[in-house]
Length: 299
Image 1 (cartoon, rainbow, N blue to C red):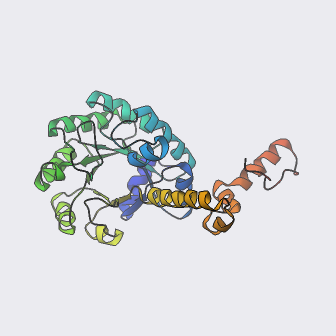
Image 2 (image 1 turned 60 degrees about the horizontal axis):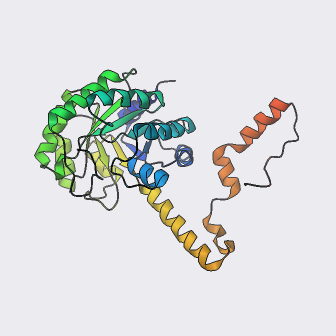
């Protein structure tokens, strides 16, 4: 089978690829069943959902990689990962790339912010000078074992310096060896179109909610030839709102009896997990056929 990076490249070469953020292994498996061609692990979702922390560079490289590996093992889809600023300087980026590649992911994106980093759609962020980011990209390219492992260069310069600076940085990052450019927080349809026209390379668009960018459709972005489109926190935000509503109502009512129609059924969960396949393996290993098709308890 082609490597994860090769499969991600093949997907965007064929069509513009919608890449949902999957904040755990189960949502990645759901995305695969629904026919998506790639999935994404957001640093914001990982920080908030797994660690209960803001996305300001508090998690370590190994914490990121460990969780990425769990998702990569759970699905056959190529996984693109947020790697923040690379977890250090250029020399550190070498190890970052090697560990993510060993974890089985398809690629990472590196951003040109200064630590402590911020969400790309918030004010108060800063960017490193272009030469510093170029060095990180060169290190990333040199470190990968698989030439198809994808290196995406993200620039946050639009809201720190100018639109023109974002374009100039994109050209420098491509010259350094980046495979794809990620212009963060463009502020209008016209900017998405102009960036696409001025940067002739594979491009990634970020359609996060409640930020500086307009929420454009896949069809609109494909028209501008963005080859990959992230929806990094969409599933996470919907799931967190649903969980909060459920917890509030459960506390008020003292029972979940009236909430069952809002839940994923046990049978639906087991179908996603491939429970019956595991049961069949268990029966085959023990040489029997009396194992129950469904346990009586989920405890």
